[in-house]
Structure formats: structure tokens, C-alpha cells
Amino acid sequence: MADTIDADERTKVRKEFHDAVNMTPAELEKWLATEESREVGFKGADGHGSGESVGHKSGTRIIELLRTKVADLDEDDLAHMKKVVGYVHRHLAQKPDHPDGSRWAASLKNWGHDPARK
Image (tube, rainbow, N blue to C red; front, side, top):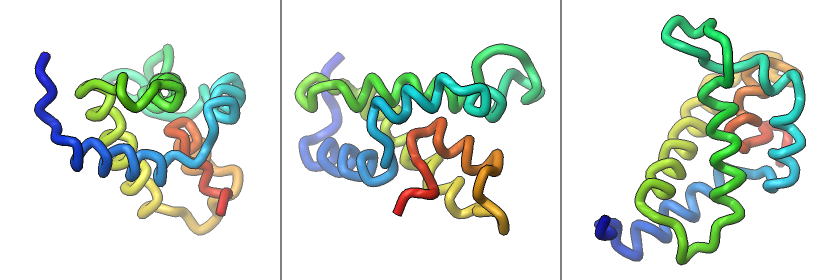
């Protein structure tokens, strides 16, 4: 597949992704191994299905993206990076009154953003 994203757009997407994802691959890997991580997020058509949530699965992909050389990122990778940025921004706008230890915070962490980190 030919690259249709120009160099400036690629740079912009990578910057926005790295601004949104404030966890290292090791931190995210450790978080995704927790029960708390697996308990949150959308699962299945009714949101209550079994298996891995969308956010948890995205977290695994984010780890791969963070470990991928810039030159090796393809359009699918950049599309997922955009998806992550959009999710983090939307979710941050829905901050609850008591975010510490909330499902909101856990969900954000599945997407590579620790809201407790400054």
C-alpha cells in the first residue's frame, strides 16, 4: 500500500501521540497485566461481553507502536495513533469529580495515559 500521509502529517500525528501517551512501554505493560486494567472498558456489542476490552487491546498495540522505529510506522499505525489521541482527548474532557482510582482513570491508563502524571 502506498503511503498517502505526507511527512508533515506523519510528524504531527507522532507528536500528538507522544503528547497523549505519557506512559513508557514498560509502565503500560505492567499496568495491562493488572486485574484493574482488565476490569474496565467496552467489551462486546452490549459492553458487558467477555474477553479483552477495546482499550486493553489498544494498550497492547500502543506498546508495539512505542517500540517501533519511526521509519517503520505505516498508515495503519498512524491511524491507530490518531485513534489514541482522539480517545485520550475525549476522555480527559469527561473528568469525574473524584478521578483518583476511578474507572475513568483506569480506562485512560489502558490507552497509555496516566491522568495522575503531571
